[in-house]
Image (cartoon, rainbow over all chains, first blue to last red; front, side):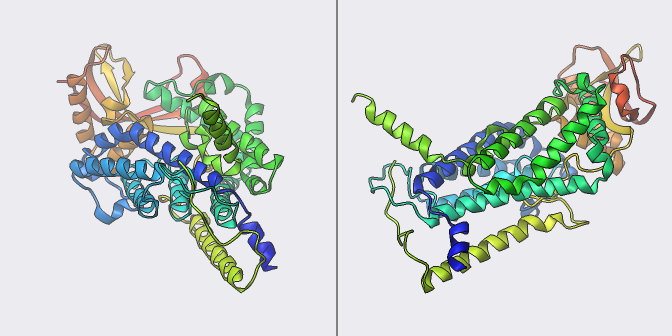
Length: 294
Length: 162
């Protein structure tokens, strides 16, 4: 029994697969932080009465804007170290910790963005994994054999990811039968379109023209529930896994087009990096580099 | 970039040592899953980074109340404002959350003055003379009807653009 559990928890995987996931997730985190930096600094100057702390932001409360700027600089420094795999044992946990505080702070001003939760969870898993045993800058050590110590963190990333989708699916079931019928989805879309109108934006590109077709929203609702509640299937290998990744990505694309709400991490595909054999991309890039004339 | 050696060999059969390793992996996996699933229990609050993932999951009625800030032209026509004018942010949802929070805390007049000052600092194409912090009640599906308006408008604060 133990060997079966161990094989499931930590299937042998190459170090380069986990390392490629590290590079993808940390690179996304850095790009995302760069993208929100300006807006974060604006929020840091808001009236402290609007501060409603979530997560680690409750530890220090409202801080001077200069401290937020400093934290941003520290995050970029640590993130670059984690990206290239240098000092990984301390740079990766420190990066995860600082970024968790920074994003907690960002989400503590009255509106919670649910596109950052999974990113932070992934960073924490990677922070304590041997994710820099390959793809490490200026390392000349030889390649290692596939091992369960690389497969286990990848499995953790997968079960955490599918858990978040199942939780979201169960929350919708609690909303009652109107959710499954599609009526609730249609009203959510109508409200998002209204909000966009009231704020003078047109982010919900195809939401308004679809609203007259009530039947479509029933199909959207069922598709969403199948994808979210069916997420555990993605832990299985092969085509089922790839089919689920394609389906969940399509769901996020649909939400973006219909409601104007973009979940950048899953839409980028990086949220699902642990579900695909990324080491093949690494091998291909390595071969390409070797073929290039000196 | 390269890689470093690792041990033990993945192909070695499970023994006492690997049983301990399996237990550690099992325990850490279980602890992480408990943390991730904890917010899924009924009545739990949303948090960060552990969430209830409530997005679009809750039931909606046909009527939607939108709390926001609008600009008013000299002829009384109302114009939407940008997220920056409403809350000094580029994010639409953050701007609407700011208006909602101000109304609920009874600080709509303060927000109104801040918005008016931002309009004076960075004028909009429309010639706005005043600002209103409002709760508009809509029949949500009316949004597809041309020229539709809110069923009811409650003005919480009104102030002049300097």
